[in-house]
Image 1: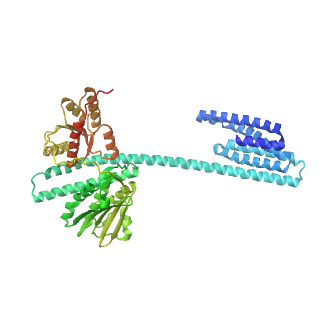
Image 2: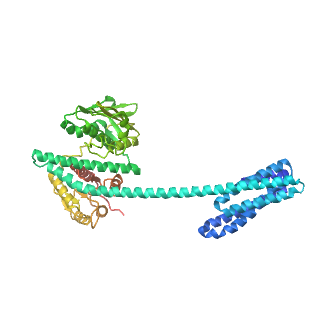
Image 3: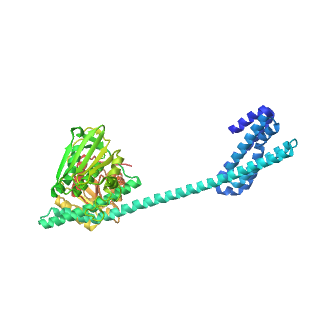
Length: 557
């Protein structure tokens, strides 16, 4: 529309106002009719396929009328008018190539109308033109329109290839998304199925550790626990890798005390280090003391992995943790006096499924995912992990993180208590007989005698019949699942004005989005399987403190 108005105003210089306005009025009416026609065809959708011939005929007439203005400028005969008319003719010819992308028939109609107009205009000028110039003009016209036609067909072909490539890319993206969803569902299912038997192995191993055992028995039991823990670590690494690839790895910043975190990490591996005759040191520079805002759980995961490798691969000497804070960056270095790593192998260690020891010897276990996940975690936090190592001297892994200093978090009681309050009224819903035995054995050692039912419906019935301090709720159960039972408990609390009963999800569903879903559904806490006794007792401790603070719920609509 703007170019049409500009052409009409410019043509007034040579053709006068009346002729230019007549052409403008005709062109505007055709443009308006064309827009109405296109809108109607768009509304009809696939049903409009039969209108292609009619639209091509309209395009022929529309283009012929539109080309009348540049034709008149050429016939005017002055050099400037011929130049302006020729330029406009060329612009119309190039714009007609866009119609080929929509339809060859419509594009050909536009180009044919313009060619017809050019030939008519040329015929009117040939009366006073020498024959050789006429012939040369016809050759030039044919060559020009041949080039335009070739360009139009090339443009149509390119557009078709682009559309096919886009459709293929979209299809493959949909396939990838579907495959990723299937992989996530598979990992979630396999995680649940693997954790269930692991719960029986590790749970009973923890129960047996409290019994009177001979030294050989305790040693054998320790092997069982370590093997089960190694399998759990591999499972967790695979799930973390899946979260990273799916973009579902989330960070949960909260205030944490650095010294408490590092001391806890050091204590975790102190016994292993001492068992190998290794020293273990912790050095925290005064500049690093205090509290920070960050994901303490993920930072602990990084340090545990680095410390585990350090102790595993060091046969003599020691392992140390050092911390300092400088220029807004917290630096944590885990160093060892192990065999070291050759310079050309150092970066490769951070690849996936790469093992620190030679794959042929495989003296140490693992899936080769730990360092890759640690680096990814550090980079998600805005930092990185670097390695300095010398063969025969040792290695030092440095974690650098841009963490913000905050006030020291309020100290609370250690949630991993040695035992729970004796006489605690605990209702547990668990359908797996092995898991029932593990749960009963663990709680009995803590002085708690739980009432255990094997589905959500029985749990709801038992909850209504009594008063409970805590409910431990499995999720996947027959008859009624754990979330349905929870929903009914929360509804009845509101309707009957009963105090809120803390409900802890006790499940092998351990992926982050699964845990978030459980907490959003009304669970007060989550304890994963395989059971960790300290984690379970800590959750019970938190639940009892929650119950002490909980107000009575009012009836809600």
